[in-house]
Amino acid sequence: MAGVRQFDEEKVLSAVLDVFWRKGWQSTSMADLAEAAEVQRGSLYHAYGGKEALFLLAFEAYATRFLGNAAKALEAPDAETALRRFFQVAISNMTSGTPAKGCLTTKTATEADTIGPRIQQRLRDLLDALQLTISTALSAEQIQDDLVLAPAEAAQVLVTFTRGLAVMERIYQEPERLRSTADCLVRMLVPSVQARA
Image 1: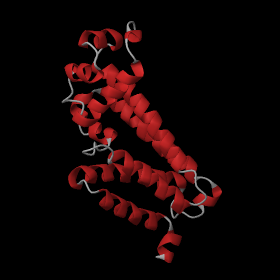
Image 2: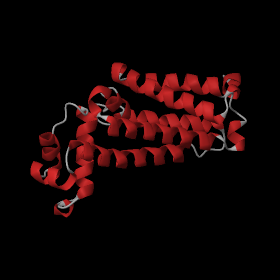
Image 3: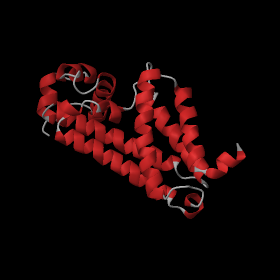
Image 4: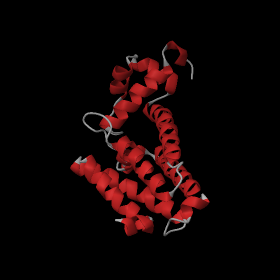
């Protein structure tokens, strides 16, 4: 990556991530990325090799941050608290920005015909890592005893459910609707919550 030191790489990748998140993969051009990063387009090509490489680097930082936030949220004394905190992170992620930017992973996945195999694989890797993170957290004895499903099954449901939430966010753009729907799933997965309701 010759030339990377000509500019602040962290700042560049943050700006690049924001453009991809707002505009989507297909609608983003190298000119858009260069303008946002305040770097000459030729310098971006020279340093990174193109749009796909820039996306993958920016997405890596995004994925690391999101997985870390999810893992921290899931550190809880009981299943109800863990799940509610997890949904706070997931919903905050997709409703951030003004206007809300949505879920980067799901938005990118909807462009499956144009993103190419490397980006498709990176999206799968993130969702697999998220599922493992959730399953591991829910496997704690004090948590898994509260659940109606095995930790691995609950994790699969949660990952799939958050993809649906991301689509609903795009259609309705109502965070309260997302929180209310997530609360329904928590009550379904943790019978003690239903019993108290």
